[in-house]
Length: 446
Image (cartoon, rainbow, N blue to C red; front, side, top):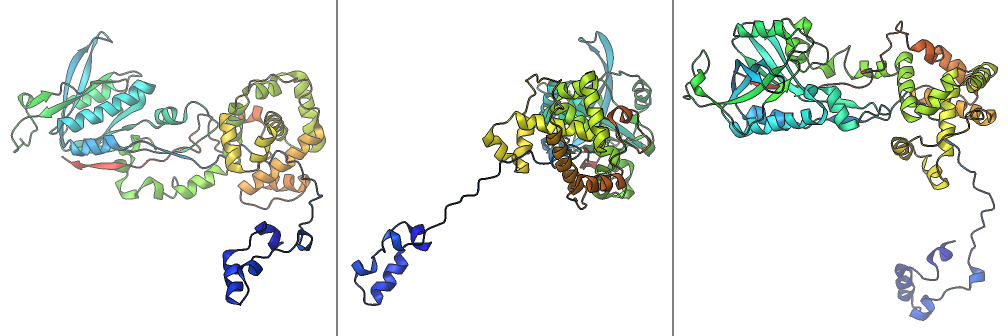
């Protein structure tokens, strides 16, 4: 075995050792005849062709999206000292709208921050920038950050096959006094659409600022800084009004630590929520529909196919969604080439393939559920994959797997009934059940 591995060449260390023992170089480099070499036995066992691995779409591969923190750094460096209020005629809306101006001492940093905000808004709309205000004592907090829905659209697209964790920054500034104008703005902000123009101004007054704030003649408009039209500016008068995933959450609950450390909304709670039957079911439904929308539609609307699926599920004592998922997996398997099938055995490669897959063919839906043996074998592999994802033992037989899944509550759902199911606290398809966490960066007090 060793001689054949070197293919006729002795290792240099071996030759040197033989010369040191008194053999000539020619003797030391002698190779035995091929017949004397140990031969590797031919492999007569045919390789078993791979099969579609078990895949349950109720669980996503861990991914995360983090928004660029540049705006936060720039706003901190801009030395925000105040907020100014006013009104301005907006030519696009052909009406007068309130104006909220952020006043700082470093124009360049304000320009960079506002350009980043504008890039978000140009990509996915005016709600891409979330500006919020929370009353606090005689003043208020004002927060600036990306809206997480829009951030996901910009980075992950509208495809719902993936549900990444989201990490976003919020710049929070404490303003020590509150102008009565803000109360009127709060009433105005309750309308379904309440446009507000966000602008930036440069403070040009003396270093010893007035305790009442800068005067109008000490504020200069920044020519190169874009004005931003917001359709909403939420204003909360009490901490209880602040929504859970608001960037102002850290200001609303300062004594409860970071959201990531919370016993209810922290990582442990997130992991538990992710494994709840309702969350797994809704995630599976969303991802299967994103992966093969036509097939999923036909399995719910084409009567001959529906009848076959119902009969197959009934005769084998499995849930309808298990048959549907197995058919999707078998369809996916039929669409890939032999080299791709080999890669499917690796979870990472399979994950990449799923994200690049597009359902372009039109199969014979009358025969889609005909290969019952292949479908039921796929149901078993999928069931074992689900149990492993849930962190429990995956038995070898389908009957045993079904017993385990039933104990864990994962067989009580059907897609039709689940659309209205809320008794288990099911997350909606819009679904932040497995998506969101925020990191907050606080600004210095004024």
